[in-house]
Amino acid sequence: MTQAAPEPAGDAEARDLIIHRVLKAPRSALWRAWTDPELLRQWWCPKPWTTEVKAFDLQPGGAFHTLMRGPDGGISDNPGSFLEVVPQSRLVFTSMLTAGWRPNTPWLGFTAIITMADEGAGSRYTARVMHPDEATRDRHEKMGFFDGWNTVITQLEEFAVSLS
Amino acid sequence: MTQAAPEPAGDAEARDLIIHRVLKAPRSALWRAWTDPELLRQWWCPKPWTTEVKAFDLQPGGAFHTLMRGPDGGISDNPGSFLEVVPQSRLVFTSMLTAGWRPNTPWLGFTAIITMADEGAGSRYTARVMHPDEATRDRHEKMGFFDGWNTVITQLEEFAVSLS
Image (cartoon, rainbow over all chains, first blue to last red; front, side, top):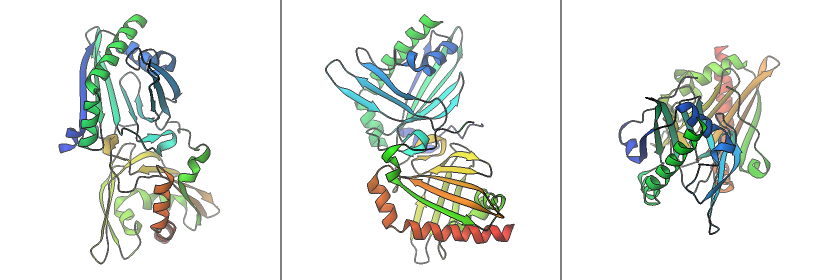
């Protein structure tokens, strides 16, 4: 499968939140931590919240559904699906569609593009999160996007180092 | 690419509008009429409306954007993207995402699955249109979904017969 035009044009970028990191883990370990749901659940959300992986069908149009629970009874339910899977380098998933390309009514509309590449003994890791409009982007940022996603990426890094 | 679970579960079906037709044209001609934008624009919307194909990138995540104009100046602008392309048999596209998997803010949220199979000298043709919720499904039906899509499928049939 060739990749569809990955670069958005013009002001679409203003609807994105982007994190670039260099991680100590090799990308083979990052990929393994990402694509085995039994491993994913161990680093997926900021501790002490816990993750239940309700569906994980790693193919375009396949379900990706996590349910997170907080220590005080809070719940975050996130049905979605994978859109693109390029082994060892690129994962795309969305809340806009669920399994079989079915339209969703997400509480937060987004598509995330995760890319990883070699960087010395470790990896460059990028998360680009695209939103339907600037208001949704801003809401996501105010919810603590950068703190939350960076915490989770550090959890991923430590977990993947322990695997490699 | 294997196909992601195509069959929706349970009450998700209540959010779908489905048309089954048997068409006189062979599916090779249907596929050709569907996948060449210069041909597509000739049958895509009920006449005397006309279609401008603003983007047509026939691959998963590729842009599919039509703009329709009515004789009285009415306009219907429909940005979207392809999700799945199985030559000669299956096309999936959505208004929920635009090129590069970018979330959209559609005036009507849907994903359409078009399938075609041999049937004698002609073809079986199915359009399943999935919506985010029953209200959107009902709104689409009241807008004249069955009249509009059936008119267009008949235009496709006649056009494809003329090609074959």
